[in-house]
Length: 334
Image (cartoon, rainbow, N blue to C red; front, side, top):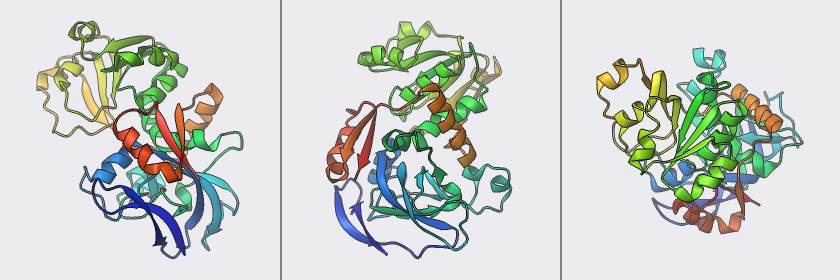
């Protein structure tokens, strides 16, 4: 089957409409007619080949919402006409220890929606049925799209760290991930501290649930946080004073990386040993946790701040996202 997609011919090149041939549908796959697709910061990195894993021509996009139009011979849980969502992961082996435990996102054979295959910047996409999430009727498609990657990426560590009432959670970087993290942590009862280099985001951060706003470029403000945080979620993808950030943590506190900085981390051992602090990170989350996250978001009225953009203006959308002008997520729609 052929479909229309928006592809980049090379790193940093503009996206052009083109016709692509989809692979034959495997027995465990579904084919989706795309209605919405978020523009995630990871798409920008893929389009520039910052991570060295892009294959051109590249059809990016991995926050996909659409309707099932075809199902493989072995698919039973999904039906034609059903509305589903797909995030970063599009396939897994189903038989390894991780898949059997419900941790499909750790599968050694994991397939990513737009890595070495055609992603969601298209009219159609196909994925393994196990990785497609049925969406509740009451959940708006444009709202759902960013939750499928950005939402689960920031929600998963909050659950893994057992965030609850009065946990002190710092979120560094108030963008697509951070503005959702403030909402999730606040709904869990945590005391949330927004840490950003953009002073103009202070009011919005508080609207999203921040108890405090700290300017990361102000040494006095940063110093005021020393030894106060149980969890610090870093959504930034730049080099930083990581030892200094560890100093913001209480004993047994955790620095949790959600975005890869360009350089290896340099951390003095005593910054960890002294207070039994730790550094960890996480990718997305399992399909089961995505379902849990969507239910939590709907129950607490959590939603991304979005800018809807027609697909035929995709290059303008990519440019605005790359310039940091989007508040806070772009969602493309046909």
